[in-house]
Each structure stands twice: as C-alpha cells, then as structure tokens.
Image (cartoon, rainbow, N blue to C red; front, top):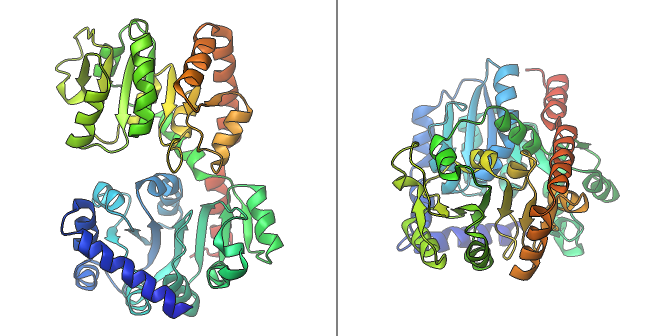
Length: 414
C-alpha cells in the first residue's frame, strides 16, 4: 500500500506540473518547491533548535496562529519553522514575522521527508487539523521526534475508520498526540483503539475572539455604510451570488450590501459586478472616507479584510454552502451577527451548534433567505437575543490554546 500511496502522490505532483503550464496557482505550487533543499540549507541554521509548524493553507494558519504565538512565548530559545502546502498560504505569509523561516512543504515522499527532517531537525512538529502525510509522520516517528495534530475533527465516514483504510489508520497511530475539537471525535478515536487524544476545543475560537478585540477602524467602510444597516456576504461563490442578487434587488433601498468574493481576482470581481443589476462600487475605488456613498453595493477587491468587515455588519451571509462547504462562520459570529448560509454545513460543528441555537439559518433558496431575513429585520428583540447567545457561545468556547500549550510544556519542556 505504501508503494501505491507513493505513486499516487507522485502522480499528483505530475498533474500539477502539467497544470502549471496554464494555471498560475499550480505554477506557484511547482515553482515554490524547486531547489527546496538548497533554499532550506542556505537559510536555516541546521544546528539550531527548531519547532516545525505546518499548515495546509491560509485558513489553517489562522486556526493555528494562537498556538504559534504562545509557542514563541513559551519556547523563546527555539526558532519557528513554518511550512505550507498551498500557494494561498505561503504567498500570504512568506514574510510573516511570527515565523523565523517560511517554506513550501516538499511533496510527501521517503527521500523528501528524510532530507527535510535532517535540515530542520525539529524538537517537535505541529500539524493543523487535517495534514496527515504518511512519509513525514513515519519519518518523525522513526527519528523519535514528537508530532502533534491540533484542532482535529473526526467523523465515522473518514477513510481512517473503514476496513480498507488500514494504511491511513496507521498514520494516526504514529502521531504522538491528537488534540481534537469535540467529544464525538475523542469517542470515535477511542472506539478505534486510539487513546493518545485530548479534547481541547477549536483554536479558531481563540483566534477570532482575539481579532475582535483589536479590530482596526475602516473609515471608508463606515462612510459607505453611513446610517443604513449593513449586510455582508463573505467568501461567496457564483452559486451564492445567484440568491444574493435577488436580495439586493428587493432590499437595496433599505440596506447597504458588501460582497466579498471567495477568490479576489479581476475575473472574479468583474463577474460579481455583472451579477448584481444595481450600481456598485469597488473598495479600491473608494476615494475618501468623507464621501457619502449612495450606491447600495460595495465589492471588496483586496485580500485580508473580511474578519474586520464583519465588525461593521448587522447581518452576514457565509459563502460556500451551495458547494463543498461553508467558510468560516466564527469570524462573523464573534460580533453577534445573525448568520445565513447554504445547505452544505453539517460537517462543521460550530455551524451545527449555531443553527441549533437559532442564531444561524441555513437556506436552500432565495425564498427561504428572504422569509427568514424579513422575520429578523421586523423583530429587534430577536436580533438582540441572537447577539447575546453568540456572545456567550464564543466566550464559553475559548481556551483550546491553553489546553495544548499546557500539555506541551508539561511533557516537552524544552
């Protein structure tokens, strides 16, 4: 099975090299890994003391950042080596001051994993949520380097727990300790004879709460909103925009709308502009924070603003729910907002919990969205109840970072 896995990973790498001929993201993935051994060897102190922290992409980085920040405080004599699998994470954080070194993770393989660990020689390794690479985990185990996974969540449908998934189950067996988000994940792992587990919760609660306490002022957003209530749609896909289009048409005189496409590119932004049949502005085109903007729609055409934008909102729609799954609901929930999203949300425990609390509302069509939206805007006391419920939920759910750091300091003091 290991041979088949190696062939599969190599095949994936080959497909990306072919895709790189016409796809910029694939090209970044491929080019970023060229001469990786020389890049690492020439920049890192191979005799130094390191902690290796790996994230698949930008979302996992944000999830793991509270732990990284605490590791810098608790292990000040160690250098932080941060790796990414995807270009979206690496390109955004390649100059991140939180890490001493930032690299692309070389493609999983026997030689790559062995050489990478020789160069980095970490005291321990931390993987965020889902990054279970066979050769890297096995090499860490063989070299007796502790490995940890944080904010993991497991479901019975995953391959690790199937009769044909023994190879992948063995990856979990080699991990030193798993920090999981919920009791259901712990019980599933225990049922499968994996007991090196702690329920820590989800570090995203720590991250979004911390962000909300130091949200920066966006004067141009305040000027655009003016004295009208604001509806923000974050990380939207074309399937989301189709139902939001009618919402804008029906409520353009009462509300201001901000649309944040999932992909910020000229093609994506132009598509959004064409979808909404009303006057719209681009954030890059806002000239002054003193203007009184009358246009009902603002389209965000730069990266990194969404979490702060929610602090100006009265209602929020989270994109992705008509596709593979919704995006981050906690960034909006931390501000007490009523949330809407599409039907693909049930694999996200926080979305399920917010729905059960009736502070988030899954919708399958525009008619459902409009009906629920009208209920909320006609009942100010209901909106206040939602704000209070979300506040209590966010406060009660913090603390995952403390659980993880306390375990590491007790068992691996450095």
